[in-house]
Length: 101
Image 1 (cartoon, rainbow, N blue to C red):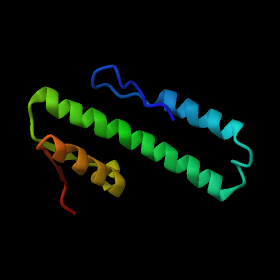
Image 2 (image 1 turned 30 degrees about the vertical axis):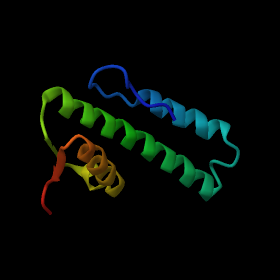
Image 3 (image 1 turned 45 degrees about the horizontal axis):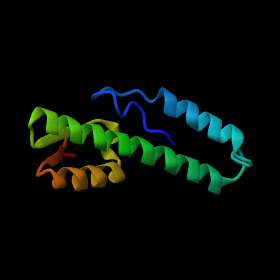
Image 4 (image 1 turned 180 degrees about the vertical axis):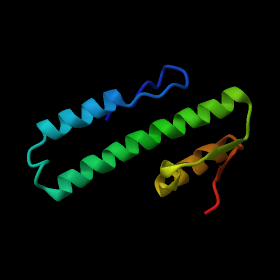
């Protein structure tokens, strides 16, 4: 799946990705009935979103000269996002922090 607005500063827009997923579902045989195909599409979407978030967050910290990122809200509970952020930020000597439960 495409990565949204990767060359456009720190802005986010996922409308192009939404369209790409819609077209993928439409063009993939059995995407409405095969749970494996549906799971694969969902996993691809999740990976693309996480990849975009990690790259933009890492870029934002670099540009601002900061070493700590705080994330909160529902998306911050995603364990794959947490893992990928931690790995990416460690490479630049930064860390990520979450709201305590």
